[in-house]
Amino acid sequence: MDTWQVLDEERSALADDLATLADGQWDTQSLCSKWKVRHVVGHLIFGADMKTGQVLAGLVRSGMSFDRFMARKGLAIGAAAPEELLRQFGETVGTHRTLPGATPEILLIDVVCHSADIRRPTGLARTVPQPTLLTVADMVRRMGFPIHASRRIAGLRLSATDADWSAGDGAPVEGPLASLILVMAGRTAPLADLSGAGVRTLSDRMELPAR
Image (cartoon, rainbow, N blue to C red; front, top):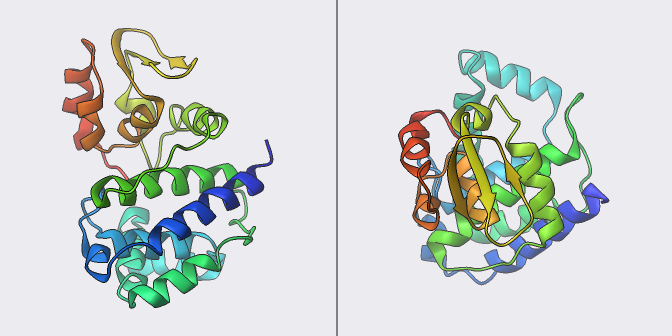
């Protein structure tokens, strides 16, 4: 899979969806507790073109807390008017840059998860291609910082009901692959889509940091 191409497809799809939002919907609470829709878009704009110097400086100002730094950048950039956010986000399509040592797959996880953070509370819908979801699921389940998915799903057996995908051993958790990805990444709303004896354990672990 050409990750950059897939990333551009997901960015383009989200840009098209954002263009349909009424101005008031940009202030809808997203699935990220710290951010409204506009702030999630701000985060995605910043994430598409982060530079080492500004990240290091921002970390220092944020007490070396990556989560605090990213939260503040999302709030700051997301304060712009919807039309400006839409313009800036549209410019991320075709932007193929990462921080040194990072991979485009990390950006793909960010876009897939945060697109759902926006779409679910605003009533938008997209069926992300299954190969994309499979790639994202396999990466997310192994992630520690900053998502902490590996700790969140330890001792559980996750199985998709709409794809040939499973991971882990232990009490079962079953549901749509897109919902499993979001729950692994710390979103509580998609817990309602899941079933199995392990759901209660997974729910109890949602206090682990999520981004």
